[in-house]
Structure formats: C-alpha cells, structure tokens
Amino acid sequence: MPYTTEEDGRLNNFAKEPKMYGAEPPNQNQQRNYIILGIAAVLLIVGLVYVAASV
Image 1 (tube, rainbow, N blue to C red):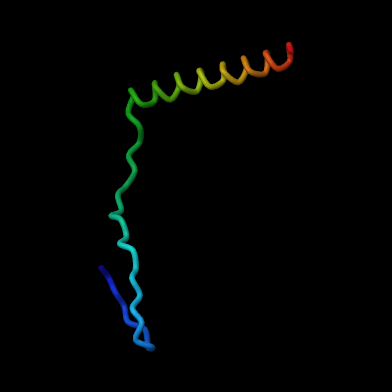
Image 2: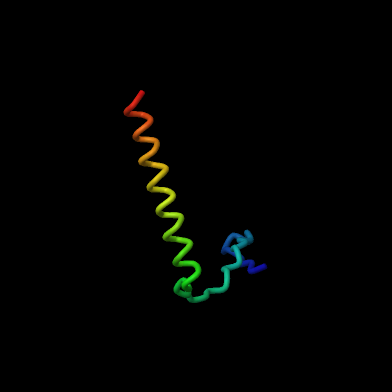
C-alpha cells in the first residue's frame, strides 16, 4: 500500500488507482440490443402515462 509520512510523523494511506483503459464503441449486436431496450422503455412510459390518464 502506498503510505506517506507527514511532517508530524502520521501515516497517510492512499487508495490504489485503477488501471486506465480506452472505451470501445459498441458492436452491431450491442447496438441492436440498445435499440430494442430503448423501444421497450418508450412503450413502458407510454403505457404508464395512458394508465395514469385513464384513471
């Protein structure tokens, strides 16, 4: 663990930083899944608004 000592003799413990990596764009399968989930979310919201309005 990376400890540092202050001028008063106290130790400070710093968290380990995670490794950095570059994000990759989604492939065709992931894009299709995002579209399907987006359509399902829109249908759910429209259904909820319809039920709330009809009550």
